[in-house]
Image (cartoon, rainbow, N blue to C red; front, top):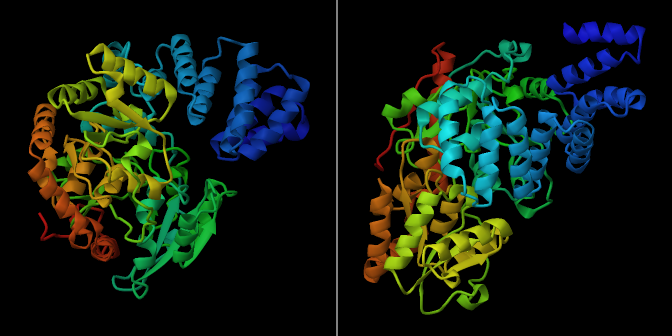
Length: 573
């Protein structure tokens, strides 16, 4: 109704400044950034120094993937009005996207100073600081943040939050706040006309921006191809980066139909899904960058699920089922999920048996000593808390002939971590950093490590699968939330339950004991060498269990029953 009124005003006066501004806002909310951009160009022609219009122009540019242009708009808006908190916040987002974490933390901090009541900006400032391992004020920031989160009903930044605290009840609250950003929309008429039947061939639709050399693509590469085509048709709706990789081409070719929806708005994508007769729509993004939960909000499919991209509840009425497993989502955890749980028989995470292989390098290629025990972790810095890093340093103190091998994610994090270690009596030479590499080369180099130390409260997910595929044991801590239990599930399904710890102290002591008991560590490593015998890497078995779960969910829907927890069943645990 608001847009119709604005159109009427603009029909009478195409240069009505307030109508142009309101119209651009409305179009951005409706998911039409190109049309919003057109209105803003007219406005800025007449008022080139309108800071609000410049900020909205940045939003329109960013929504269309023009990130450098967006950054320029935000900077110009700030030059005109340095007190404009939204422009500072948006500039922080663009710096973060560009991996300029110092600048991102500074921009977020400025926005938080200007709007002290905006808890989510404080959260992003903390998250950017964590990416550079700047812990100088982390305890104070986290304490203030927790206090604010308990009372703030408007926090709408989900992923950054779930990486900070192992608190599933609070995670549910925050994601429900996020879900309010997606207005409820009546289901597509095409979807409503769909008459379900229990045993017919079902059409699955996968929706993702990550069909390139991304962690999600690495995991699902074999999934689409292995679906039973007598019982399922497979559609892929994709957008986002095109790296023209072998992995991307392989996934696109494995779908019955792969449709590029990059240029479509939410309504157009939803209508396409509905016209295709998709029965079960599976979102692979959740509350991560470039998600399209606005598409799910239009209910284009009778059943809608979330899988893999976001490790936790989405808090949205648009999602019927979240896919988990018996370790990550045991029955007692149901209360912390907005969706019903579709519980798979083994590990929730699918894997690809057809990974590209690379030659095993020598330790010398990574400056690793031949005669030392190599502890390793290749997670991003935001997953490394000061409490965890202190434990790693204590492990190094107790294990004198050892080094710690880490990801050189950004120079600021590398510098801070090394300085932190030196302050606590660990020579900087005992921390060895390596740059990110293509996945095949990364997995090959992992074989050089003796033991991988997982992070907490955010576990390694694809990172842990890579480690286990490389045949290297990993030690983890299993917490209470989805994101903190993934590595535990992976280890159970790789036949290494003894590497799952309940506390940081147990984790620290187990790492030291494995350093001292090399025969035990060798025995654990030997189990991983027989990959073909590990449940974790039995992809056909995984797909069979997944399909049984999908059929069970559809059977409930076909008989008019609401979504409810479905345990597919297992002989594994």
